[in-house]
Length: 301
Image 1 (cartoon, helix red, strand yellow):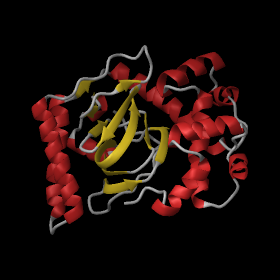
Image 2 (cartoon, rainbow, N blue to C red; image 1 turned 180 degrees about the vertical axis):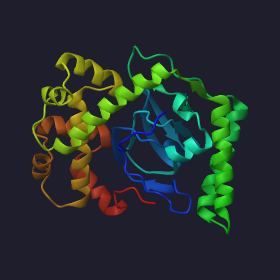
Image 3 (tube, rainbow, N blue to C red; image 1 turned 180 degrees about the horizontal axis):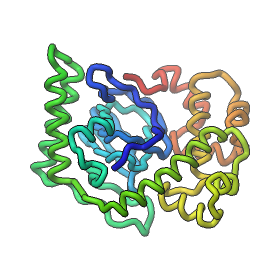
Image 4 (tube, helix red, strand yellow; image 1 turned 45 degrees about the vertical axis):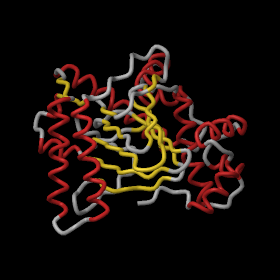
């Protein structure tokens, strides 16, 4: 596990604890595949959300959680309403607590089994031992209650929960990695960081797989295999996912016609857009606009 040079999810830091720590209401939101240098914990308190990680899909309902290791590629999608606790423990804190963390990683831990996204995917990871699962639930319940109450000195209690959580992860879910594995992972993550940055800068343009391969100075065939292996989607699918996210932002924050929004975000295939939007949000763009006039349409803390 190494500190990533780029974060692909906007992280709102709680200044009191120098981490992301909040309970959020989500009214239908999609975050395309991304990673960051924080260990991320999502604990659903109401509603339902879907997390795709390690080529598995986890449907989290009330009382379910998932703990995702640093620099693990994942995506999130909430089609309706969800209220959840979110924690993101940054690399510098992890490094302080666990000095050897660069040469280990942690199994992704969930209270529900994942569903393989591909037929050739390995079997889903088993659930944690019942006692450990209960201990994790107690910690997350405590953190959720603490966030709502925030009594005097709550930071002391907060850190006691975080230390206990990290202890359980270290004692039960640690996997050591060799220096060679570490260097290989670092190389692949640097490549992905470069190409994802390129897409975010140019998604409004007519960019192609050839453009991305040239940017990394890689053979297009190798780049195709590399991107599919680590991102679990084709390069074109990823570009469309990024465009879809920004199109959603424009839909809920402007009154511009849908066609204008598509054009300004580089999406030229209207039929494909409508199919992807329905798959992601479970409704049409017009229906989503009507919905957000009632709910507000954005993740709220």
